[in-house]
Image (tube, rainbow, N blue to C red; front, side, top):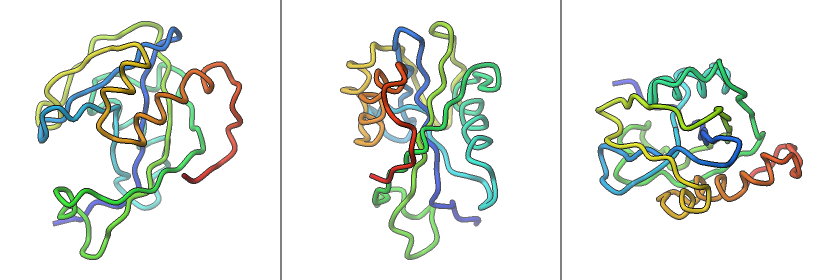
Length: 157
């Protein structure tokens, strides 16, 4: 078994008026999130991971829309229920935040083994629905990022 690499992307898909796409995890009912996924190789560019994961999880071709790397990282402890996917002793993941602006709420084709439902919500409602603190924080930051009021300097939280 190949272990997952503990480096991932979080891609908040949104419209100009800040409708946000959330998808529900198939392995955990009620766990709503944005697109997430790990790099396939240690040298895979993060932008490639983001484009691949958006396509796999939603059917949306991220190459057609503005994909923004926020140069923001979140470090978090891997939930025990998913720790077996990683090499023994791996306890934390580094997540890199992106946003993808689409022109309108788009139809979504879910990967049935990964997600069961999708919904477009206003950003405030989407942030409240997320199970992940880092996902909710990124959505809450979206209005500032969308308007260009926030520096895109690298930060670690």
